[in-house]
Length: 241
Length: 241
Image 1 (tube, chains in turn yellow, blue):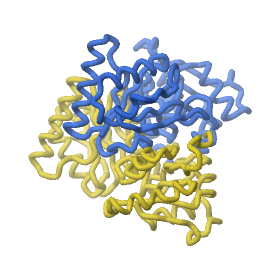
Image 2: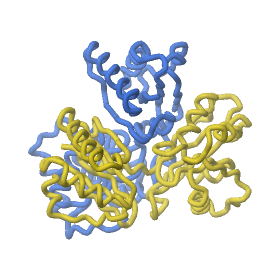
Image 3: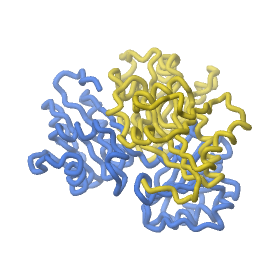
Image 4: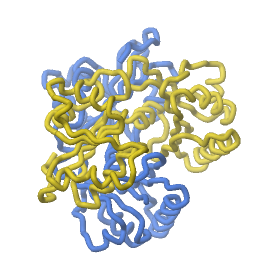
């Protein structure tokens, strides 16, 4: 990657984390280790897991000598500005999420916006993204697809949500990706089976990149006689034709 | 990754390729080299680029000793079944796209579906995905987003398409990702600028992961005084708030 051309501003490196217990060699390109070995300023979603991640990649680094700042859902708007100060002093910042790619479905995106505002370079790095791994493995349409995050909480709203996204599958052949917190994976699976049409295709992708990875892409009617073991397991659901 | 539990069937490994001229170390986890070093059956989108990729990763491999089969838009439905024969004989198959993650926006997905049908394990591997890199670097909403592929060709249909996806940004805060063939990147940029609302956010992410990588996320009205050099450069456009 080329050096930033933005004068003396530091760059924001978006550093992907692993997805749970897995070997670094199967999840991260070597450049990640090099970067984590030289960056001194980090903005992280969860401090404990970030420290463990840095130590795993670069055991020689002394964690207390690093400048590690938190950015999560509790971070106040006023604090955000102070997180960008190292950039203005010419220091690079590494952003690390609790799992997977930072700045997707985590507050890292706020720092990215701020970096663009002040003209600091933003460098996204390659790493595991559960939505993409699930989509690749689903065999469904990859020309048009959507990630919808968590479904609504309330029962009727959830049913309406599932029916509405299923409609988009048939009207525009758009693949739909949904998930919920791991402890609701089983509930979500049961609901999808009872709500979706028998001929809709459903890929259940759980524990991705770990030793317990399990991926199956079947029609809803085929799933009805099966019971995947996904209780409390991080699971992506891909719906399509 | 655990060994497949599907009797004697081989597994389908979805092997990401780089995105253009870039170092392997910044794009691919070491496990990819190990896999390409031991797999003897490949199904590829483009033979020439796949050979180059295999040689780059594993110079010691003798290409003519490998079983390399084509799967692209010209592949007939009847041929597809024959591509899966090695799986039934217990051989693993590596699927390689021309660029980035296979089975997303390329015919590799057809082989993935067939693998699920016969019960062969499907193993998606970590690698560069331009849509995800662009989304991470955009600073926009990562809780809900959509990849729409190429816009329609016809002028009025294109305009309607841009207006319709912009509507979704404001109605559901859904981030929209579009692209076109590299030689139409500049045209697409010009059209977005003349069609979108001034306050809509537009991230232009081009030549991702290469030495010429350039990423800027600004409001449409800010873009109007700028001219990014994206003519004939592979470019992703991320639209949001």
